[in-house]
Amino acid sequence: MARRSFNPDDALGGLFNQPGDPPAEPAPSEEPITPSALNTRIKDLLERGLRGPIELVGELSNLRKQGHWYFALKDATSVVSAVMWRSDAGKVRLDPRDGDEVVITGRVSHWVPGGRTQFYATAMRKQGVGTLEEQFQALCLELRELGYFEVDRKQPLPAFPRRIAVVTSATGAAIEDVRRTAATRLPSVELLVVDVRVQGEEAAAQVAEAIQRLDRAATPLGIDAILVTRGGGSREDLWAFNERVVADAAFRCRTPLVAAIGHEVDTSVIELIADHRSSTPTQAAMHLIPDRSELVAQVDYQQDRLRSALRRRAEIAAERMARVPRELQRAMQVRLQRARTIVAELDGALKQQRPSARLATVRTRLAALETRLQETMHHRIATARTRLESDRLRLTAVGPHSVLARGFTCTMDESGQVVRSVSGLAPGSMLTTVFEDGRVRSRVDSLESTPPLDDSPVDE
Image (tube, rainbow, N blue to C red; front, side, top):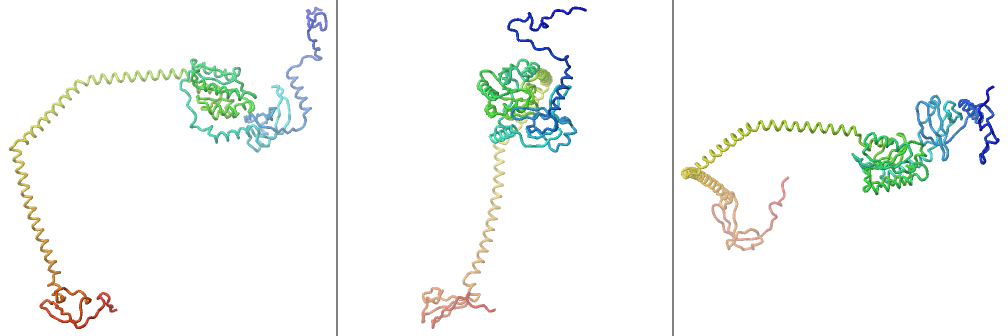
């Protein structure tokens, strides 16, 4: 039988123990078991210890509907991982969302292949809205009324940033994603990493202070944009970015601000306020940092356009130079013809200004004016005669003889004044009545007032 090699660990409590060594652990009572065997034992213990359906009430978080439903149920201090198979999920009569407070029924078991303990839900009913979701919705409503989410106040991102301040955990996966993306797209962009806590009680205050200090020192530090980011997590893990102090810092920030918090399905208050929101840290870096290959392609494209433009302008210049002699000759001919026309016009004008020509023109105009004067005088005399005859006829029609001829008479007193009313007469007054063919003298015997002719009654 071969001798076993010496092993000091086998000498428990022997001479080989060194002073101050901790007491050795007792040797296992059984042979080593496999992970499958251990997970099977855990599953058996859980199922025997937690028999029967169990009801859990809590807030839904990280719900993923992939046929089967995978989610977490949480309260203020703990989280339980849960799953609901497709057959049971199809029976649920509600559309659950993250933040809903629900009651689920099921059992606790241990998944042997993955070594994970989780709750297997068979039913779900809505209980209310979770506390964190209530706080989130209330803060969003308040900030929306204050104008924190207005699109008009958002600033454009810099086209070619030189330095970007990244507010995140220096040991997290988010900064590595940003660094890797920046190195791939444009290594010349400098990243100024500001290490802050992104989870826990002090996270919100540190993030807000970092944003405020970076914004105040943006010009001296040469910062063109600020990126606030972290990786995914539950609503509790991301809650620091839903605090009011962070919202105020983001709203007052005058440096272009980009926020990428959690996964694409996550939404935080700082993302709603930031000038630009990205679903992941990598996408945020892609939005902020231009792609070097695209820039090179644009430069090449602009260079080709410039070359084509210069070539075209050179061709146009050559064509113009070739046309210059012909155009010059044509222009000289046009100018010469124009000069000849001007000379001819001036010669004609000069001829018209000769005394004989001007005298003939004046005589012609004088003869025309004389003819017009005679015609005008004849016309005016004829018009005056016609008007005079018309006036004579009108005067004759209204003259005293015409009136007397129509049967009217004219009565005058002794002084020769026309009597117009009986009020100026007295009995015994002498009157003279003029007719068309003579006069009659009479004396007033009596006076009688009668109503005007217009007031006499009309025979009906």
